[in-house]
Amino acid sequence: MSARMMMYVWDSTIPRHLKHILIKLAFHADEYGEQAYPSAKNLARACGLKERAVRSALSQLRKMGVIEIMELADPVTKKPTVYRIVVHALPGIREARRRRFQ
Image 1 (cartoon, rainbow, N blue to C red):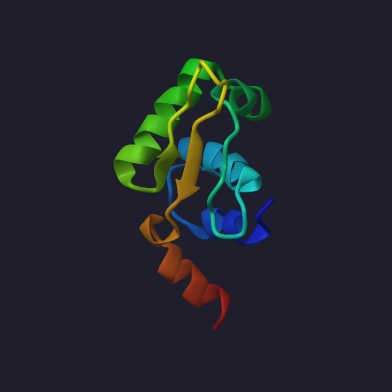
Image 2 (cartoon, rainbow, N blue to C red):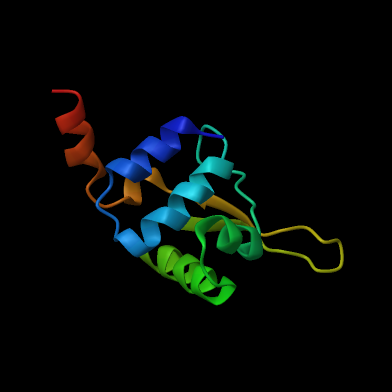
């Protein structure tokens, strides 16, 4: 769990409907925002959403450049998709961090 990543996501101005999923992804990430590999099914259950809504949100986050896929899922070996959170791509993070430390 990365409390720092979760703080960055909370401080960002990312849209509300994406923030909850991204916070849960940050919960699963290491301190650098990497190695987050919860399944869409687990994210949906944790966020109280349908799996399709989670997949759509993950796609939007990828298009925004906020998350990257480090490793694709492999159904043969049952390896999950591994995500990385791109902190510098989070909207509003500089302003929020500046406010916090003034």
